[in-house]
Amino acid sequence: MLVTMGDLLANRIGARGRTLLASLLFLALLHVGAAAAQQGSELQTFPPQPLALDQAVEYGLQHNPLLHAADEDFKAADQGVSAARAGFLPRVDTSYSYTNWQDKPFSRVEQQAGGPTVQFQTSDTNLNHWQAELTQPLFQGFGITAQYGMAKEQRNIAGYRKTETRLNLVRNIRNAFIQTLLAQRTLQVAEASVAQLEAHLKDAEAFFGQGLTPRNDVLKAEVALANAKQQKTGAAKRLVILRAQLNRLLGLDEKTELDLAEWSKMPAPDDRTDELRPLQELSVRAERTRPELSAISASIRETEEGARFAGSTGYPHFSLFTMYYREGGNFLASENDFANDHNAAVGVRMDWNFFEGGRMRAEINQWYHKGAALKQREQDLLKQIRLEVKDAYEQLQVARTNLATARVAVKQAEENLRITTLQYQEQIVISTEVLDAEVYVTQARTNYYQALYGYQLAWADLERAVGEPL
Image 1 (cartoon, helix red, strand yellow):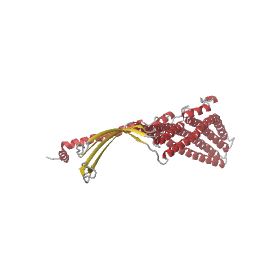
Image 2 (cartoon, rainbow, N blue to C red; image 1 turned 180 degrees about the vertical axis):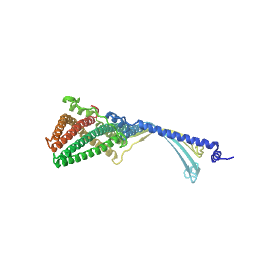
Image 3 (cartoon, rainbow, N blue to C red; image 1 turned 90 degrees about the vertical axis):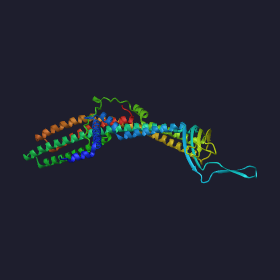
């Protein structure tokens, strides 16, 4: 009878080995399934296509690491409040010590003045000491209250910083999104210019071949085409960089290709004013809502609490304590032939520092100067915010005016190019006029898109300057 190698191996492994192999195979399948599920989950979180601006902002707020870091900072500050609140509560300490005396501890007592002394042992040579103590602060010179107030202000500051990070992220995503749209349009304008100049070069070569135009017309067309191709290459490179910047803000791989949808934010038609409130009202709103101002106000309040904490050392500190201990020769300290094996006590303790080399006064002055510096920065920040609102407001008005002018200029330039091209084909005008007309069209289209997206950028900057949606 023939016995295969597989049969021999199966016999050697036995039932226990087969069970082990089956378990390993099951774990491997679970791992592969979990990896596949994770990969599927990651694919599900990919932003929708085409991607609208509001969707990009929402996706970025969920996946950008800077906002997650700000959230962790806030959580850390919140734990600091919990830690400071613990200062109001009682504190429980326990300790254990073991002492081994080289010689037996003893004491001598005179029975009578000038008489003989009696010597007796006072403790075991091996001594175990267990102790538990509870301490409840009663009055700490307002120090605990000040520390708690400082912790709450630090949490407020972290919250305002988180809001500031969110506003900056929204503004940055919007700017990168709009700049990418502008780069796409600029590339399209450059591609249209190349196509138009290629067609003109064919016309120039045909006319030169028929002897109707000089060689110079062909050379001029070739030079113009070469310049247009360089402009196209530069526009394509800029688009790649802007896409990578947008992907970074969204928490995506920099090579991710996103199909971006146009933002519907446009100026009101027929040169009517936008739904904007007056500049003065926007400035007032910014002063009320900007988290930077709120953060610096919280920092000022923190310095006031810090000065209170520094001055708390000048007051007496009172605390209530209770203590229980065991002491004996064995580990549990239950055997003591020389003293109490256990005892308890309750009492009140006062600590008061009378002199520390002027340290308290110096620390109070330190907090005072910090607060004064923050107040000066607050005034400067207030002026800066007003200037940011005014600048964004004026940029919005300029972009709206430029957009209305650019619309007309594009129509005029395109019509001029159409007429000039027809005239050149009829040999009424020279090649240079066609090239000039093409330059006018390219510049007019570029100006139009810069005004259009410049208006959207100014709107995003104005909302960031105000600190809330308009």
